[in-house]
Image 1 (cartoon, rainbow, N blue to C red):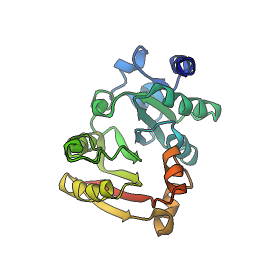
Image 2 (cartoon, rainbow, N blue to C red):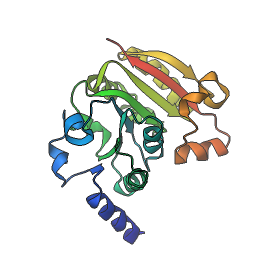
Image 3 (tube, rainbow, N blue to C red):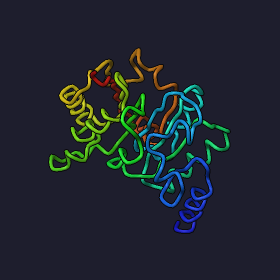
Image 4 (cartoon, rainbow, N blue to C red):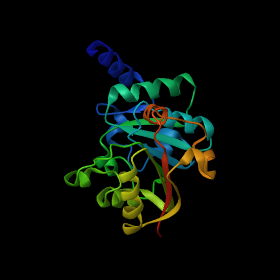
Length: 219
């Protein structure tokens, strides 16, 4: 297992679409994603906690007129998405290896048009609330990075976390546009384009309904 991880880390070191500590863009990319990485002015979309990058790569394939950044701290996971994007010749994909709490060190105010949060750890205990990705401190960070009217998407299998987010978002600067507690049985089903993360497929196979909400930054 360790040998495989080291192999993945070496892939990341050599991959042009992975931005991580030790690479030149790591300390200079903030506010410069368009000119210094993507070399276009297309909208930037983040996937937070992207894991192996299935969603980031899938969306990038479906929307070549948008730029996608998958964010995760796990280098061995990011390597899978990075290599898939390179194999697919997807120039509109990047992977940023960092913890989500440090997003504002790599992205400038208003630099992002959309954010996807896909199957995060629900942090179910009350004392874990501040670690939930729809807690007020995270939402304030997203609001800073998003352009006016920017969109935040959430997919989860966890009902308490979904219900928590339905309350937290409107209380912290976002308007709920769409919401369903059973995505695959709703008219919103076409929004996910048939793309499934590893965890989404696993949860769905176990009979869990997939919850989805779409919200907009106020102002």
